[in-house]
Image (cartoon, rainbow, N blue to C red; front, side, top):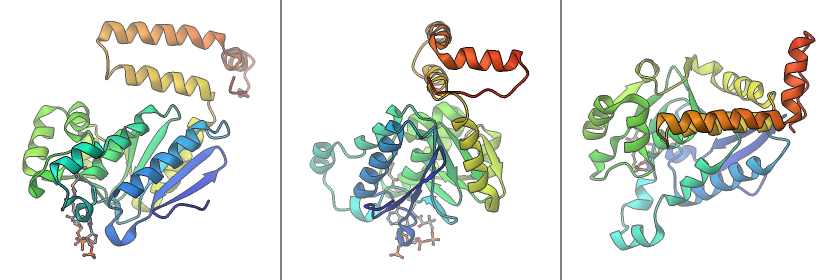
Amino acid sequence: ETGYEHIILERRGRVGLITLNRPKALNALNDALMHEVVDAATGLDRDPEIGAIVLTGSERAFAAGADIREMAPQTYQDMYAADWFAGWNALTRLRTPLIAAVAGHALGGGCELAMMCDFILAADTAVFGQPEIRLGVIPGIGGSQRLTRAIGKAKAMEMVLTGRTMDAAEAERCGLVARVVPATRLLDEALATAATIAGMSAPVAMLAKEAVNAAFETTLAEGVHVERRLFHSTFALADQKEGMAAFLEKRAPRFENR
Ligand code: CAA
């Protein structure tokens, strides 16, 4: 699909695929790229024909961070007035499941963008890090918060304070990524995983995502309460009747997404 300069948007059946495409800058995240990603992702989110989204980069880099060239001359007033990076928050309002497929560098804003997705599938070549401190700044797209929640304080603090990176094996060990696959298989695995999700009932997948996300925003008792109410609400859906009937009739369900 056309109209984008820094990304490629494709539809593969019920899966939307957004590919970051600034190869000369290792997919550095400039302001224009942010607006394109948000525009493409929100468009896919509104499309009832799309049941899951994959966000990926290149073999060499998912994204090597926010665009240092663009940020270097900016003043405090510029950053504050623009509320720089706030636009990325739009991705957290998507209801369609969003998978990051990460190969190569996922540094700074690249790591943060991957962590804004619902989960990360990593190639064995993936490298994660929050090296901002080496540039005299700190993470600004949620890295200090999401990395800490994902891998715990000790590792997050060490990474944010030293800027050291971790490879895919360490990232899997400490729970930053769902799964590591050979680099040559990454996109196929991500698309297949997305297709699996897109084959579920779309409203139920949205409810499931909402329930898991509640774990990060609420107390345990509140989260369990939210989950139970969301579970009850699935009984208002035709897809609950279909899913359970299909099990009892020993056949595959045909979800109607309603
Ligand atoms: N911003 C702008 N341009 C970048 C970039 C970035 N984050 N990362 C890489 N590039 C550019 C390089 O400047 C270079 O451009 P030129 O060919 O015009 O010189 C091109 O991409 C290729 O990069 P390298 O030649 O450096 O490639 P390499 O393979 O030798 O090294 C790398 C790869 C280790 C990822 C190295 O590019 C690097 O360290 N990049 C910066 C990583 C970083 O510090 N990221 C954090 C950015 S700050 C941030 O993200 C703030 C936040 O919280 C959101």
